[in-house]
Length: 376
Image 1 (cartoon, rainbow, N blue to C red):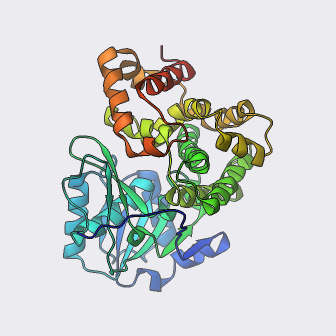
Image 2 (cartoon, one colour):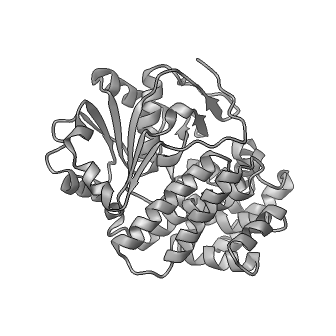
């Protein structure tokens, strides 16, 4: 298996991103579905919208539906077997970030580019002359996976492992705001938490990238500009664009303590978006005194970090109401809390947090999460 060291500064993004009025026209072209396979979400709402949009276009396309949860080793192996049975020129993924990660990881596993057993470091990198044709169509404004050269898999012992490669970049991204229609308020808030954490953490990351800064700022401004706006295709389209830009920013820099937390609580059944919602304000506070965070506040034309926290609270608040029981044991019982802190310190994202953290810092962060979410 080839190894690739992804250094900085460099900037990669999908060569084609189609958005606005053009997105619907591209989705319904017969050429898109010729010699293709389709990976889709198992969520009923998304599938109904896909069926309504595509009509009979995808009826003859081999299709695999994702089981519940984050992509696991077993799920990726199943996807690889599906691709072996159905050779095709194009892999189309329609769904949330877990679906978009799953189809790309399945392709990599199908060609033996990633293993079944992952290293303790939590990061796998590869490069290959093979150029897959990924068409990614997000149905949530969450992970920004459609713009990223990174995909995340849950290993056999519950750790989240980042797989990085330029070969994981989509050849075409289609951003169609219709897919956000009717999303419940708390789900939208959890999605926005992931967008905001990508934008904020990539901007302040130690793995600095000037171009990623600009993508992060554009993403954050779009999200804040939509807060309080009525549900509409215009708002939804803007939020999808924000998620894409945040994913590009994070893929070309890195993230930090908030993502280390979100990855670590996944083993307790906390979704990635909710994990980011629960940890985001604590993460901002823990990095508030860095020059990078002060620069972010200034470039967003805010008065202070407190004002940034107010905007973030408005966006993610609906996601963290009445969810204290999900984290109560992890944050209050000594043994569970120590396990959570250990997992965070072992997570690769912690290395690029702008403040170098130790065990005491992580415990203070967890105390702050408990206070901010009402878990004492």
